Image 1: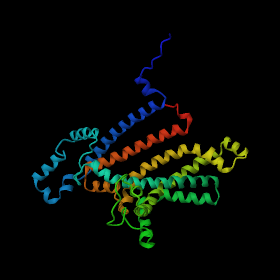
Image 2: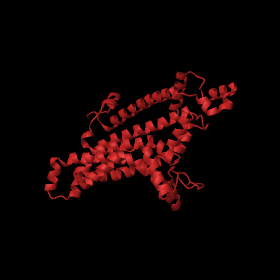
Image 3: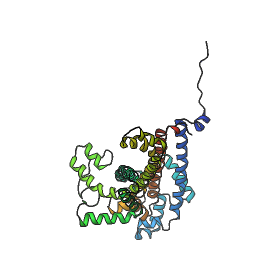
Image 4: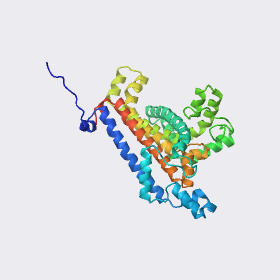
Length: 357
């Protein structure tokens, strides 16, 4: 009787292999190192910021009392040397503890759970609009190269990329709210309106899940303008990338062969052009989504949108160091996860990369 071969676990193969599992392990280890480096950089920057967080959070009268100052510093660990503060922060971070906000006096994790869904809602809608319209406009622009539609779309995309976000936000709010009266106002709902019971934290979805169609429509009306403004830059970038990718692929021999076989233009574009073009589009879309989270500070402040951007702004103004670190960790984590997702989608779309390291 022949012996049954026994599979042995190889730690070296797990790190150096070419399969999907070693690929994920390497990416996750890289993510851990990146997060560690980001914590060090963010912590160092917060220590170099001019100003005294104790004075910013206590006020003038309390700051003049040495006992109150000493108690505040001891409560938040500000009386320790900076290296000890960083080591203490890392130890708590491993346990999922982001510290306590100096301004709200609540755990930073609770603050982020409250503010992050609003930013996620506006960013998801903005990316959806930018992806759908960007791919569509970019494809049309490539198919009508150097003709009128191409010229119009190129001017539009270049304008979206070039305009400062804060200028676009202020202009859009002035025109659509003050002049035309189309926008409902600022915030996520009408003042005094009761938010839907929390399920996901996304008002439009939570209202639908609770069968409240009117609240969902109201939440969507407040979401629409800031999300569209936030999508302008990403829309311009995705349009330009899609146009360049489609133009490059249209010159390949297999596209001309598909057309010579009598396939419709729609079929040629869908099967033989857009699929390979998705590789570059996915890359820029992943970066755009993470960038929208990081770039939502100005948009949220213009539209009084109670999201991560407003929390980051208040933390920066109040020198709330744990709050600033918490926002930095969220944005960094989103960037890392989006890059990981893009890498995984690469392997799904392109068969040649499935066996790559």
